Image (cartoon, rainbow, N blue to C red; front, side, top):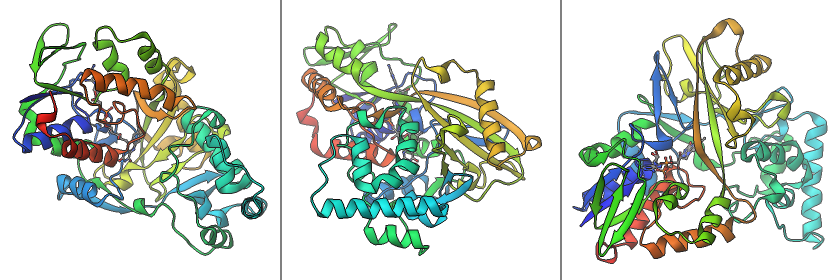
Length: 441
Ligand SMILES: Cc1cc2nc3c(=O)[nH]c(=O)nc-3n(C[C@H](O)[C@H](O)[C@H](O)COP(=O)(O)OP(=O)(O)OC[C@H]3O[C@@H](n4cnc5c(N)ncnc54)[C@H](O)[C@@H]3O)c2cc1C
């Protein structure tokens, strides 16, 4: 049994490794010259940056976390999260609802008062069930936290109106804060939210790509890079997978590349399935990498909800994740700007993006102009799945079609789900458990 895996990102490589360990013949077909997909990293002049935005290793899934930490082995730096939100020129502890005591008095009163008013209204049965993400935010956090942070930040990262986003994905991903924690946080008693990230790991050398390289090690001979899949057909029991120049044959075919890239490879996709796939929403990412002489604040990463500070939605400080991520005496900052293909950000030159980000960092007091020693920009077409209101209506026919065609979908943009690395690895593990070889092909 030979399995062809379309896409050599984290999902494809984990799938290849685990199938190989079960004795199966595999071939991974990856379009780019390098493996890793969103989990790639680049080292230039001794600065290492993740090219798919800043990545850390964390999970509340012990099996998956154990797997990731085992893979990087000794090449690990353990870190304690110190994350902030940049709000009205001050650092507010993250998550926002755990950092209310850092707010100016008026905003702290607004947030706690609205949170409590909302709870009372709920108890009296005066609220109605939320129907979209924006309503869910107001319902969960109250008007104060919603308007000071949750709505502006979410609209900045998704680049999509929150009242046109679905809420089916938020449960478990954005936890409801316990009342006690919100009250404690408002009066200055420390509390922690999102505790599964409170400790995180990062490779000492090689950036997050070190994780996928370690996973890929036993299957390197079976990876074809520079193989951009353009056709996928089945005749009888044999799959024929081509790149326009050559065709690979396999007994089964699993897709980990975006469904938007898979459908054009398949002949005679029904028009309504193609239309549903075209309507799926996602956003792209520009990573602006900055290296400076000197130190940066001791912060893991920082959210920037304020639109007046520019387009950056998040800053991270990779030189804090690993002491080897920047040269001696230097530090690094990665600014992330999500956007949509064809929009203003896509048309901005790298120099314009660097200028905007460095001006913002100077305004925030994080860097001074004479400290800058390195800058670069890396762009990713697929960054985040956006759960718009039509998501469920559109994803169902796409998945049904692929399943009917005999191609399982595994991974972030193949399943078209907001999966972090741990979610992708869990998906691979579950796929292998529930799909014994004899069921495939
Ligand atoms: C800004 C950002 C920050 C993140 N931070 C974290 C974090 O801190 N922690 C965490 O756990 N997760 C994080 N993630 C999520 C993580 O990046 C993903 O879960 C993971 O990388 C997805 O892996 P994948 O293999 O499913 O998809 P991808 O990495 O997208 O891989 C798909 C592969 O398919 C290839 N491909 C595409 N078209 C073709 C074709 N026609 N033929 C052949 N190959 C093709 C691509 O080149 C790519 O290599 C973050 C994501 C983003 C965007």
